[in-house]
Structure formats: structure tokens, C-alpha cells
Length: 433
Image 1 (tube, rainbow, N blue to C red):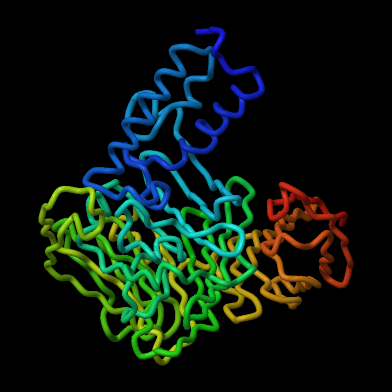
Image 2 (cartoon, rainbow, N blue to C red; image 1 turned 120 degrees about the vertical axis):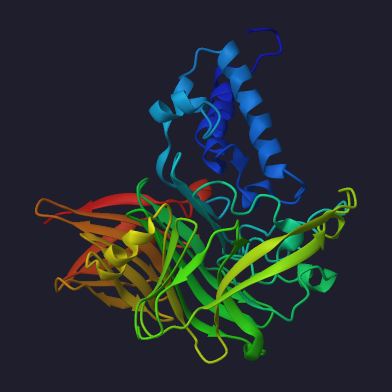
């Protein structure tokens, strides 16, 4: 209703865009992504945030003539959700937060931090153990119950997607004072596929970490991994509720492409990697995570899947949510997805005609079709080549470059990058044949 207190048209549009193109992407099965909530991690906090947001969205729709689908949240109105389903990749580059979502089916997200985006805070006796909550945490959901109220039971040095020294106290003030010192943290997205990448340099741990989202998969690559305490360094693929579901694994005779399947989520491990699967009954107190919470004990079975990094400076794994057990073979044998490089210089994959690459320095990438891609500065890019055109989506994670040069098969292309408030955002460009 228009009153003397109503926002002007410009501010109104900013608010509506923030809701429909921003907050809407954080909700899956009525719950808000934990890494989007931040520090008030209390009992049913994800559901409370989702319900509050839904109430606000309903108020907006009742007062303003807006598109109903723009304010439909996953899980609340199932009939409408079928018509208004969010599908695709959304990169929030100013927040170092990326979402890969197929409403009513799955949601995957990753949260990083660096020079331009600071990690979540711990104040007012909140977020008491979340020092690593923004260090590449990648949550994988297919039913919305994977992490609901898991906070008192989490090992906070083994959050999903992170590479961490498990002897560090995640609640220590000294730990909270440390940050990722890298200047290379960013992402690129074309709306359908996306990459989030981070040169990780925190305390004594170093790693190049990339998360590729495409074809209903997440491919996670790590390289250049090291620590002063490598003996206790691990990369955690997932740490979630067991939820009374059986864990299936490939037999030990498989030397490559080991796999794990649990609760409709498949985990594939290319090459000679040996993931550890651990299930255990845990108890924990809510007020150890959030002192504002009432004293209450949580009890449940937790599944942890992780890779030790003491004798290995790299890792690679593929996650397929909403996957039936019988679909494992198809994933392990598929030929469309290839890991092209996983080094401290370049991390890259190819999915059909799409090449997705992270260049940590001015490097060369060879593509199986014979093409060669070279850049003269660090960057993140998506490259698609068909019979008619070459398309490139590119970003500068350092947010310092004015231009960048790409050489494809020896042909040079100079690109003027976004600047000012848009430095670090994705730019789409075409190259002539």
C-alpha cells in the first residue's frame, strides 16, 4: 500500500531484487542455508529464517503487483513450486557465496572468504565454533534434513568441503583472529554452470581449492596442499546426519573411481584415492555453539567422509545429489566429464563442450580437442566452443586488473574487465571464428 513512508521506485526495485534474486536462492525445503545464516545458529534456525522470509515475501506480494514466481520459496507452496522452480547456478561474487540449485530436487552451495569478503563473525556469544565456516564449506542437500540441527554435533574442524588441521581449536579467540590471506578468491557463473575458487592461505594451511558446478554435479579439486602439521590435515567431503540410511561403498578391488553412496547422494573419487568413511554416535550441547541457546543436549549418528592429506598434496572428488544407487555405474563410467588439470597452476574440467578453468597464474591449458588456452594473468573462466562461435565468461578474483589477454590457438584476444563496484564480477564475451 502506497503511503508517505513508501520507498521510491528505485529503492523499491533494489529491495525486491535483493529478495527475489538474492535471498530466494538461499532456501531449500523451507530451510535457509547455514552458511547464509551466519552466526545465529540455534535450534531450527534454518526453518525459522525460511518461515520468516516466506511471511515477508507474502506481505510483499499482497501489497505490490509483482510476479508471484519471483517470491516463491522452495518447499512452501508445492503446487506453485512446480511452476516456479529455481534451477541453475547463481554466483554472489560480492559475498563469495555460490549456489547450485534445482528446486524440489537438490541444493549445493559453497562459501569462501579472502581479502575482499571477511569471514563470519563471532560476537554476542554467537557462532562460538564457526571460525572455519567460510573456508570453502560446501553443503550438499537433497532432502533438507542433512544438516538440520547438526551444529552441536559437528566437528567444526571437519566442515564439509574444507581442508583443515584438525588439531586447531575452532572456538579459540586466536583462531578467530586468523584469516585467509590470499588475494585470489572469486567465482564465475553463466547462470547455468559456475566455478568458485580460492587460493587458501590461513594460519599454517595452504591449498588451491576449486568447486565446479555443472550437469547436476559438483567437481571439487584441491592442489598444492600443505601444512606445518600435515599429519592432522584432512579434506572433508561431507559431515552430516546418518539419518538411519545405509552407506554403500565400492569394493576394495577397485583401484580407481572408488565411490560411496548414502541417502541419494553419490561421491566419486577418481584416481587412486582412499576416502575414509566414519559413522559414530555423538552428543553435544547447544550452548557450546550458541550461548544464547538454552542448555539442551543433542544426540544422533553422524556420517563423516574425508581424505587424509598427510601424504598427498591434492584431491579430487565428484558429488552427484538426488542419485539412485543404481545410477552410480553410469556416473563412474561416463565420458563427458573430464578432469583436465589439477595443479597449483591450473585446475580445470571439461563437461561436453564446456571448459571450466581456474588459472592461478599466467598458464597454459591444453584441451582434448587440440585447442590451447593461455592467459597472461590469473583468472577464472568458462569457455564454450561450437561450430558458430566461441563464448567466454571470465572474472578477475584479485579485482585489480583492468584488462586481460587470452590466447586461444595462438589467436590473441584482449578483454577489458569490469571495474569499480563491479570489479571481480563475471564478464561475458564472444570471440570471432
